[in-house]
Image (cartoon, rainbow, N blue to C red; front, top):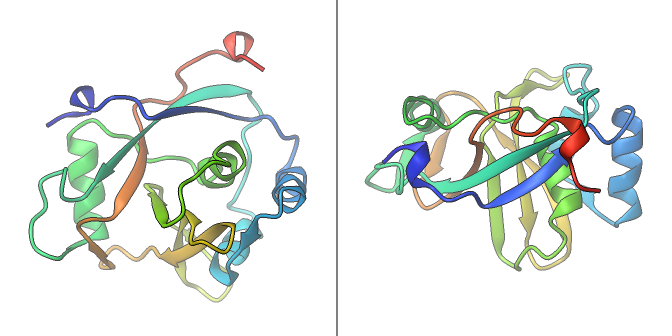
Length: 172
């Protein structure tokens, strides 16, 4: 398997908010809640939004589809193998942007954003998950340490490439 074997799942736009505060305001406006770890990540200076409006192609794949067997795999191994196959890690902005642009997410779906972890103020490495657990749309933070054990059935969101489309060509 390589990235070219995986069909594009969804194209979203990033860079359509002037700053993090505007992005968070938009999330609140749709009634999206953020778990404690996700909120801590979004409040960090390391969390930034793109200054360029860009369309990005997202791909979803499970760790099992990447070739992992057994019940769990280490996050580091999943990321390393995915990148060897041509998948790219997403900037942290992808998670809240996807949450805003994927309002019809099926109940019970949890999508882990394949991203470099962001360290929160207490020192925890956190990655984000876009979820619909049945009580509404949410952003969840989860353990982003390299040795975090991830169930191989978990679905990840990666990028094919960044950027894919210049801002002038992005449909509004």
